[in-house]
Length: 309
Length: 288
Image 1 (spheres, rainbow over the protein chains, first blue to last red):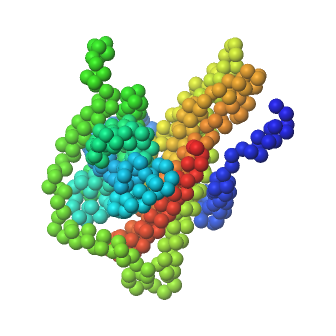
Image 2 (image 1 turned 45 degrees about the horizontal axis):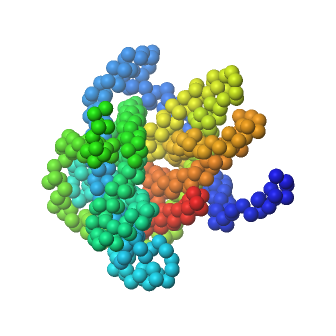
Image 3 (image 1 turned 90 degrees about the horizontal axis):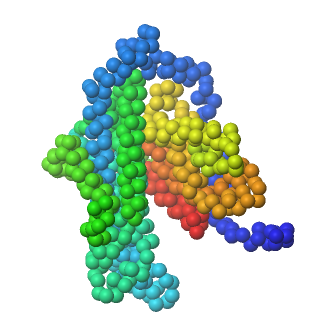
């Protein structure tokens, strides 16, 4: 291959202006973020901070009863076991239960919402009009006003659900329902339903339109196509997203600590406000353990789904 | 192997198994959680809380709802400043996470370490499993603690410091990027790598010019997706006292200034949706 040919290949390579401008903008943003004076790097290594860090590492995170004594592993383990059986293990279990219930609810809600959010289903003449762009289909598309409005509303709802942080939902629901496990479950469920609904709608929009169109042509109703084709066809991919969100949901559940349910998040908040950093570190570590367990379960489930697909 | 003898329709599919297990797990979780359905009925005055909150959705505040001390910047300006800090934390955290992710992702992927150089095992192949094994353990550790908990730990260790917030974001994000990067490097098509080896390229050359370029579009697309998430995380860091949008939201929420809450929420939503659209457009360029 001669150099002229290489030059020509180089000149005709696909390039995207959006991509190049975006990369430049992001590089500028990164420089601005670090140099803008908002991030206090020097302050983090000031003498007072380092003194804080030294105290934190050498005193605060040692178990209170064992501070000042020489290090003894068995005593530390006994301390952990005591704290675990007292509150920690029950809290970890509650956290897992909250996230399983929340993600299941999210999965059910999102699988319904995604059908109405997907542009190829929620149009006047599903699966025909939106893919091609010739005049005929444009006319059909413009007449599907009611469906398009409705699907737009559902997509706005999904944006609301995922853009409002789960914390806000949780506090709002706590005010509404009073202290129980439900505020945490519903908050996590709503937030994840917003995300799963969006991912699910994308999956449905990317389905092969030929299958759906042929069902339509032999006279299937919208609901029949949804039940017999869309849901089964998108199930595998949806389950992959579902389990990926499950991992995230467990992580979020370890943070969400609130009145009404003694989950890990609650105990972390509790020990933090009392400045019992030894206990806090134990609960954080316990949280990491259940996150790990959930990751393993999710990996197994995704492997089964992938193999079946 | 009795299952193989059954006709296709009678076999228990993997998906069905997963769904059944999921339903069972959810049922057990619900029973164990002691969350009766009566808990779903709003308590006395519960509807008023919801009405108070959602009633302001269409009437967000443009000025503070109560008297503020002189010299306080106007509501919209302080909201914009919080939004700017949200972006600053996200971008800074993400740039640090990208460095961590590329480094650890390279170490954790076996695609360079395990390349056989033909013939006997060199030092690289012997050292490989140790390096990628320990890199993977490190990645798991980084990923299994939520960014807010990292932030809480840094708060306890250092006190309130903005660099702590950036590092708190970058640790789990860096771990996640590293995990996905290493998987993408391993799953990328190997044909160009094989061709380069035939030409006599060394392991590093094969990796840099054969393996890496095949994975870069996917890696970039995923990085943009994580950037989207990092904006959300950065906003939520505000719940722990860092001066992002989450902080403004909690402050207003605790004072029951719901109209102000909605102002900040709309700013957050505009930010999130704007970045989602931008990153969605970019990702389509990458993958196509």
